[in-house]
Length: 315
Image (cartoon, rainbow, N blue to C red):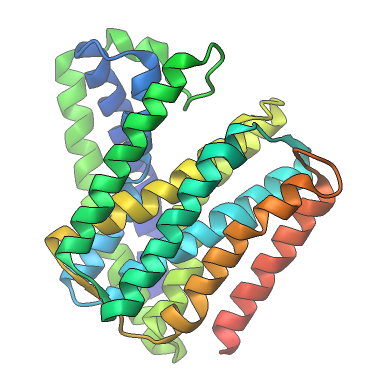
């Protein structure tokens, strides 16, 4: 039954996330926001909603390991699994903004998460506020930089949503909200039950199964972008998703309910995998072919992810 709960929960999260994105974009058009601002902010926040609901639900119910494991595992999966598979399908070009701006920001947030957890074995409300101030600053700089550039790659925004009625927007918001709440409830319950039956910790289930499940939308979007030869799109979206996962998901969750470490493995193992996988992107981006993520580099990332998952269960 626990596996069914997890699967149904993941399906509801995907459905809820899609309805939330569509309603948010449609509402943004009603408010006369530009396509660039919608792509850089509204879509990014909306696509992080599944991770947010799962982390918040878990923290409120006292399963902080799921809150942290969900975000840390999702960030590892975004790079090692999603980017790895995408690069295997087709070599990806890397925009210079990757190492000049996006990658450094991702590393700053990742290292800040480590120090926040290390200092007090938790993420406090004050630290949650710091993350939220950080993401707001990041978005302001991102929008300012984007306005100075002629060719800006942003999240795909469906122009047809400009014509959506207010009634449909409200309906989609209600459907999305209900699906996200129900999905997160089922996913957390199923994960706790499955961990108990398998004799492993909630942390193991969250950094593997839940993380893979919540990364499915990113995987689908990146694979489609790769197949369409939109080479600059995939890597930028994944880096942005990792930044939002740490800063907005954990920031909002900690603000509502401080997140405490329950399993030491999160601090002694998982977070180092997250930082390590993020860091390795720089040498991979430049050696031996500059600014290209080729197939063999994708294989390296994918093999690394299989090792991480295997060690999580064996440990």
